[in-house]
Length: 361
Image 1 (tube, rainbow, N blue to C red):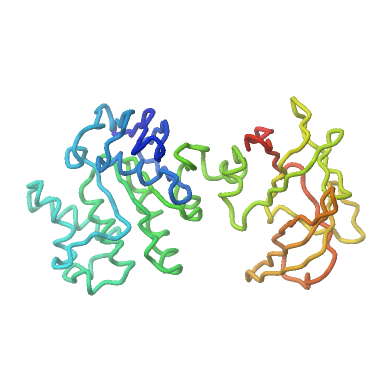
Image 2: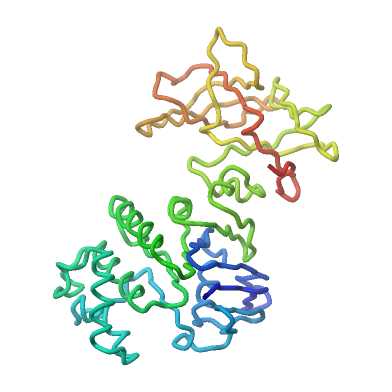
């Protein structure tokens, strides 16, 4: 068993530069944990501390029963896949895959067996005698992953491995990684700022911002039950609508529309309403909606293929326009008045000051 544990991990460069603040995480065998967040949130620094490339200011890194906090990278039995592939350009694919094993003096017969197994999984059989310069970007990335897999390490670390690939190739390699991860029994830590990768590849996702873990949960919980306003706005494309609204008599006011608030322990003077564009539905003229409604004027329609992203202006309590975006089926939405429903079970409420969710779902 090689469970990975991070205990109160902190990294301080200067009093004003603290990229990682009191991070505690556990990654079980066979689990894929993705560190997700914007640039500068601390996710790569966490990965480098796991790998031994950075020394924590305080806290511990445990792999299995071993405290590896201050061990050198080569003594941790980890494997890392970098954003830049980091292949030896003068070596063939076979030589790149076997280089680390030869340094560890693994018997040749075992080297051949490990490479054969990994080559079958990754589809590298026809590429063994090629050098990196003769490979496509996707092929090079598969070789980089293969080099990590042949080591049979206690922990696998991947640092934005798909960011250098074009969109179509990224989708293909992402599907390959999903299948590869399902065959591994070791903990996998994956770093990315791409939420699609995080949602599709992960067992759990840790959303980081400003050095802190904002939420740690399964991908579907991160999407459906964001812990705070930052997670709600960062995860999801198109981005969640977040509107700051005044409150009156247990209702949030959006122009002339009153939206009932859930049961709260206090009566706030204002709240942040959150609802995803794909959770807004148009109301037909003959309908009598059971959910709260808002009405506005469409000023922008973006064609996304299967759907249109429709932006409309809704006057707030002061008569000034607020922007609400909805993901709707293709139709003639331009320059028209549009009435949308806000399903209560898909509406989120956040505290104006702290940003925390007011209702835990």
